[in-house]
Amino acid sequence: MKRFVLPCTAAAMLLAAAGCSGSAGSVSSPGRASYLANGKSEVAFIRWRTVRAGQVRGTLMTDTIGGAPPSASVLVTSVPFTGAVHGTSVSLTFSRVLFLHGDAEGRLTGSGLTLAVPDADGTSQHTTFTQASRSGYARAVAALSSTAAHENLLAARAGSGPSANSRAQQRTTQLDLAALYQASSLAPRGKLAADVESFARDAATARARLAAEKQNASGDNHYCAATATVVGDSRGVSGAVLAVTGASESLTADLTAIRMDIHTADADLRRLSRAGLPAPASAPALIATADTSMAQAIASANSYIDQVNAIGNQARLLANRMATGTCSGAGQAPVTAPVAHVK
Image (cartoon, rainbow, N blue to C red; front, side):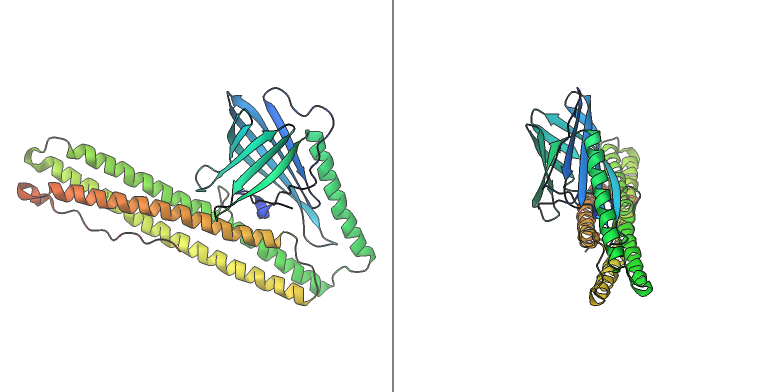
């Protein structure tokens, strides 16, 4: 079964490419389309509408069985996207800022849709959807819920329900996994998302300061007025570089916390295994997605760091070229140490 992990999905929902099924009845209308991927323990439903020529907006719904019987349940998440559909070519964007590889490329084939989403390592995972209606999705989710309920019933009848101590171990694991998801989520209000947004804002500030410096450098330098202004602009760029240093420290602290959460979750899973207890079905995917989220955040942060370091160097050189001779009284632009990459 081929699977891929989508950005910003709750608890690292995985989509199944096997066992896809459609549904009877109308499945599309002008400007609208919907597709279903239906696996043994997970269902994904993607739908979009055309907002203007070739441009679409839609939602990806995923439903996955999580937890262990007799406490298994269906976990649901919804991810909005925008994109473009031209002929049989499909391009969807699930994140605007947070991912260096945030686009899903796909192709329409008859009544099917195949999507390829890049992993952090540069490879792509493919998922195949079949054209389906909203009612077809509802039936697939109902079947998924019935599967979870049936597994819970069998576990209860077999007397295999966990003891109070076992339930406590499973509950602790679930709470630790939930904490890991919360810490590693790249969703808009997550910690990692906020960290990366800080880098983006600081880089934008540095670019704006450099643009102002270049404009002021081309102005009238009577009585070295332009030089003084340019040196001031350069100091503003240095301030943005220092802000990026702070953003780097914040991200590093959050990454350390996530790595500790992964270590805790791994220890929980080992304890469950030693006790002969089943682990939550979503655990491996959630831990893998936490690693992927960290890699994405680090790559984005380091890209911004490279940009800001280059901008800081340009700003300092420009100011120092002007602050010479009769204009040296404006002072040299301060040398700001370049920001190191996040690891």
